[in-house]
Image 1 (cartoon, rainbow, N blue to C red):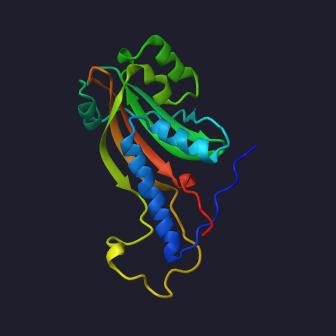
Image 2 (image 1 turned 120 degrees about the vertical axis):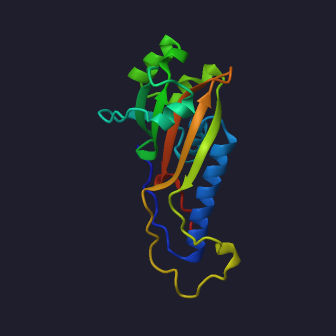
Image 3 (image 1 turned 90 degrees about the vertical axis):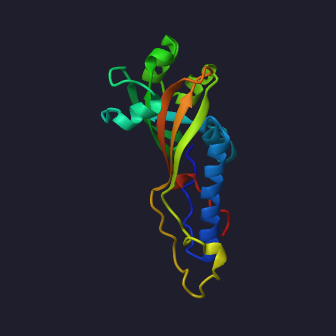
Length: 201
């Protein structure tokens, strides 16, 4: 059984406001939790009929960590890192894509094996580390309303037709730290428009 497809969004002022509200709410929820997986699972619990979030590997897309990535992780150029790129899905909906560079030496053999061989999300695999999340950057990739929209009157007769959204609407770059405060993972998470739910506009 698949999830129903996302509904078309009207380009009305109210439609744009609802889309923007959901994007900013998603951002707030991500910032309030240490696990992005938990945020996506909460969405899937509400809209996915009891499904579990899966991390589907996107193989053949290896990306070496940049100097900035290694600085964020506080590691030398010589320390081995593993790169994992996945699509986080609820049923047939791709809610986000995540790039992850992690330090395998700070994970248990069981954790490393699970990340290599299963579709278990990273946050679930490393949960025993009692990690916390430090968000480095937040980027809105789609703004359905202009900057300072709340200070301006709604234009008359301008917002018509269907709201055309890009596939990617929000991006987070964050470091995960274990219980001892040591960085062990750098993630770049890109959230898609599939996570937005039209509510009868």
